[in-house]
Length: 594
Image (tube, rainbow, N blue to C red; front, side, top):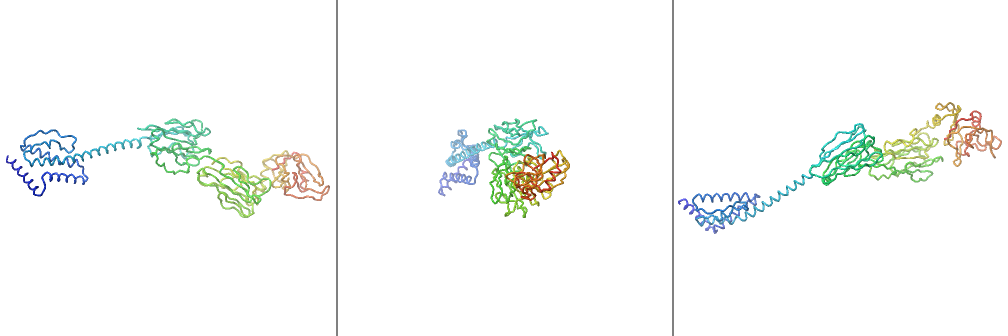
């Protein structure tokens, strides 16, 4: 009872002090409780922890009071919704003094605000937890649960080992590089965990074109037929296509790695007869950039085309119309020189590079390398030789071939990729030329022998040509129609030696001397109407060897022109040369007119 009385006095004293300060006990205690709560909120601390500590203290006081002999009262269980532990039991607790009732009332008035804040925080935590769970589920679906595997069927190696479970961002490589081996087919599979879908792919095969589309480990290509893959395309299916992009590139013969591409775009070549030697594949998050292009070409797919080039010649002071590859620019059979060349280039496929060309001009030499539409010329001087070349990626996929038609020689051999075609140092004019664009490594359009010649060629060309012919006699007659020359050879095929070399007059352009292989037949002394030609020898129909024109039945020269195209088709010679053939060449001797 003494301790109980002392506590009552202490509480009374506190109440008196509060009254002196102008505060009622209930207001003061409520104000203190709110201040504590506001400070905790401003400090960023969680309200449940603060209120839990306060309520534990209050419960401890209540227990102490009960132990000190306070009358027992019914104490119902705490409401589980109230997170801070303050329940109706605190309100219904019976105490003996009014001062104690004031304290309990203050505690009861401050509880609702605390309960509301704690409930709001609990809801926020629950929502945050639910959102985190949803994000984790989405990340799990798209964060790398798919891998890719594959193997290749390669020339001379057959099946290569499987390359398994390559993760997104890493690169699957199938085939070989640096061994010049064709890939003939492949299998690719997509391994999914939690995703639907797979990988579909299709191969373009030599002489067969695009094969059927296959999926998920099935074989694309051929086996045992020695047919190369030339191009590929790949794509993802199902949910996998919504989560990833599939990127790929191929390594082709003669070039190397082409650029990366994705999602069913073509990778490889068409029309070049180039083999696919290897392929690289990778998975990347949907919409992200593909791997860096560090290969040997800026395009993932290149298709052959030959119509990008056209060229023209300056003849008799006027530019001829442009012609396309394989067509002749200039003239033949007219001894008309080309005095300038130019070319046009229209390659819009995105392949890097361009065409360049130059000309060798009489009394000047080589021009610099020129760009399309620029004119290679020098005043009225004649062109003697030409050169064409490609630059950039174009030179990896194409060869440019060309040849020249030169006076006294005719068509020379084909040259390519910047090498000269025509003549230099021989004072022979270029009369025409041809250009062709072919896939890299294709065989030449024709002979490449003597594509560019010098002075010595014209001194010995007839002899070289003669070695390829046979004769029923030990003589051979060569007629260079364009060069207006006749050569007499003695020996046999492959061992002919020139014993005579004469200048002649041949058929005019409107009545040309025939060209081909013939043989001598009958002979005669004289013919003519209003003129006389002596010592004639027939080699084909009306075509004869005979003298220049004389006045009728005399030896007064009427027309002694030599070294020109002036006759009606026969070959005119000085009288001593015509007589030599008449006297010395047996019947059946081969005559080659070219």
